[in-house]
Image 1 (spheres, helix red, strand yellow):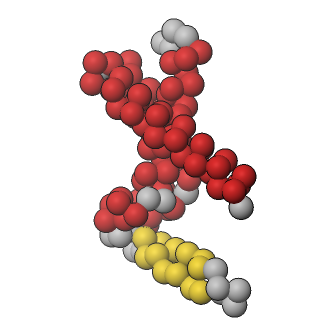
Image 2 (tube, rainbow, N blue to C red):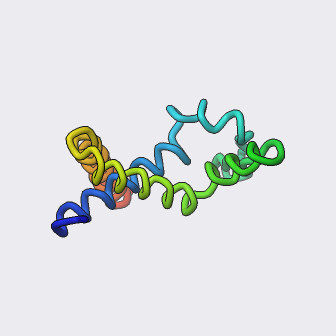
Length: 117
């Protein structure tokens, strides 16, 4: 059971960051590659748009759908974070804290980019 609002907030931030890691980050692209084909198109205004195509059928397609859906992956990441927090807190607490700090840093960066631009 979550004992405080701080623990809940840390789990929320950690889940957010882990989800983004799986669904969007380049360093985990190798995990998505067997299930998703990602390609980019340059639009007329010069911006680059990324598109995905789910590969295969059956379990391969299911994994592709999962890894391309932020909401779906988020549910599984929340389950992993919460279960780990309950069953092996000595192992998961540092992971949760690191992911939470990285999540907050991402938010601050996004806010600063909005202010600067």
